[in-house]
Length: 496
Image (tube, one colour):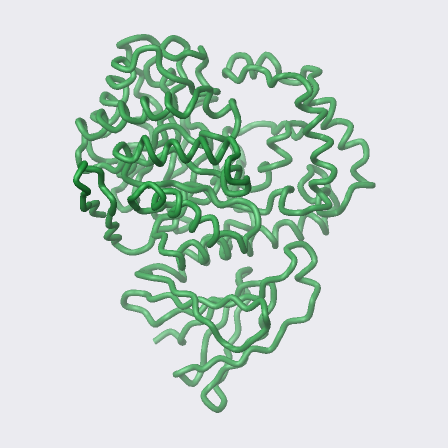
């Protein structure tokens, strides 16, 4: 990766060129690593899925629990798993019991009481990693809720500037990533609080980051528009920097109107009082307590049989057929979101997420479990990440088929109105074709496939759907015929 720029008369970079060494599909470990328990092995399991980039979180108080005293156990546990074949991306969250405005070791991150102390913390962590981490991110999804950043946009820019200088001082070759621009920004109207927040970051913080990170949730078809919005945000201030996808995943309840009609009532009841503190100790003390959130979730589960199927499938203990349907939607969207992003010029993507935060019982009466609890690719068995969920197979298949990818292009062809078709240029391998028909994410799979005729140079083509079912298509009159549906097909020349 090379970052270069041209400059205006005032010295502000207006272009930044990303020279990628191909495409890398990555995963996010989760919102913590080694914070709620011993830092376990996960990089090998991620590599086993074909992930070429690993994103992990560390917290200020986790690494520097007291001024000047550092604990490197979790950081060293991560570094000890790296082979150099993968790229490492660390998100450093400014949560500290002593160093930040909000005293906590978990959430929310907040402005440092002393920017010099914060800068020294960042500098020490980057130096400790000795060039083995490619990307350093300053906090996460900033404008979403006060739970992810308890500060203002100007305060974040001040902290980002400190962060940038500290990273570059310790490792000039590393890239600094702007805190993730999320769905709340893309889905809101101009002039809304989330838009204004990131507009200020894009303007005042332009000299303090190298890569603009976006989070691609929501309607799959909106991925290109979201990426356009991110770039337009920078262009409106006279520059453009590379965009990376720090998170993507789905489905989630807010993608389904019938589910959201119920969810809005649950949200209103769950957050009728301010959310409780989120330090590790306070979370442990609050486990199982009677809170507005738990009462709202209990009431939701009491009526599970009467809820829309599109909401039931996100709930623990839902009917097996709905569980399987959600799994299939999840697998499809792994491919869809990734291909759409790559076709828009993104070369680094990270799926949310690899696995639960820690081995142990899952509290399904938390709102976050309803929203993202079924997205992990892997699960625990006897304390090890040994369970592959169905979406993991889809991720691994896509990673294998796109290995060596240099570029992805969307192509147009005669076919059903919702046809999505992509060509993947792969070094040392023949081109890969990926096609699907854009349909309703819940019941679109029930529609019959459409017949697609596609020009093909070889006598046969190997066709694999996202679930791993394969067959051979034979050319007739210069074309192969493909049954295009809501399930992506990956088509390539036969193996030599």
